[in-house]
Image (cartoon, rainbow, N blue to C red; front, side):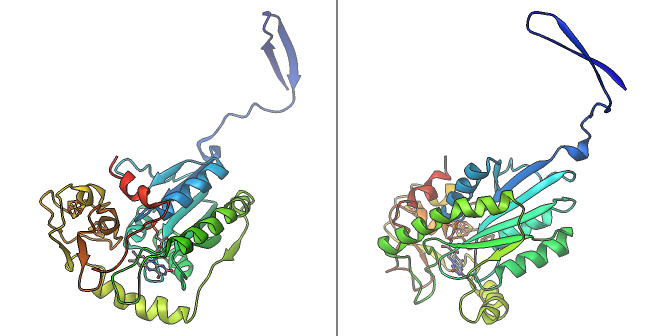
Amino acid sequence: MIFNHFRLNNGIRLYFFSFSTPSIPHKSTIFARMIYYFSGTGNSKYVAELLALQLNQPLSDMTASDCPSAPSDGCESLGLVFPVYAWGTPSIVDQFIHSLRGCKAQYVWAVMTCGDDMGFTDHILAKALKRECGLTLHAAWSVQMPNTYVCLPGFDVDSPEVAERKVKQTIARIPAIAQHILNHEHTTDVHRGAMPYTKSYVLRPLFNATLVTDKYFHISDDCIRCGLCAKNCPLHNITDDLQWKGNCAGCLRCYHACPKRAIRFGQFTESKGQKNHILRHTANQHSH
Ligand SMILES: Cc1cc2nc3c(=O)[nH]c(=O)nc-3n(C[C@H](O)[C@H](O)[C@H](O)COP(=O)(O)O)c2cc1C
Ligand code: SF4
Ligand code: SF4
């Protein structure tokens, strides 16, 4: 039995007995909820911000120099938001997962943005989480956002109408996704598309080996040397005199951020579009 008191505003003390021991917060009971995002051109950042608002949870950019590390103890919920690259995880996300080693999250969820379909990205993520840090992926969603991939024939940005429709549909899904996350539900709600196995396990390795590179970038005479491409690169892979340094994640932020459409990737991007809908400005915000 414990003898306790508390003081009223007028200074009078009220005394009472309690039969329970006072709870002294132990490090392991201080639960944390974390959301980490990576975004090449702003789509995933936008989705992550909507989720963070709904969930009232802190949000950190995986590529920020001051990105806090995940707690090794007492992490109640760990969320990852990122774009699908070649029906799998971007290399920046792979590296971030490596840095999660030691994190003991009770509930792990992921929301993956894609222009169309994501193949087995959730399986690739789940395997990496298990292999690198022993974590289980409990819930996964894919949401469609405007396409940003333009480097191969047949791939281009969406028309403003299609882009807007995708954004609206995704915004409408956020409250339900957030509620599932708050309930710690185990669920998979993803759009795999046609031939997901071939895409994720045959085409993806080929894509990563040959097309995730900066050696095909070049700049046209339209360049005004504004430096936005260099300032925006999440890996600081572009020098002030506009040389690519060989450490590229293939996110195309430099391409989409260029105000003069002066950045080209190989032969096929000259007539391609840039992100031109309401989220386009977010690509430039990364420089602030
Ligand atoms: C290198 C690269 C690969 C992509 N691969 C896919 C893909 O496999 N499936 C898909 O539906 N969208 C793909 N996309 C489109 C993006 O996943 C989609 O536009 C995403 O919302 C971009 O998010 P961000 O703005 O946060 O970078 C790819 C984009 C890039 C740059
Ligand atoms: S060089 Fe361009 S495509 Fe490569 S990581 Fe930097 S911004 Fe992304
Ligand atoms: S963003 Fe475009 S215009 Fe600006 S420096 Fe880079 S290539 Fe040149």
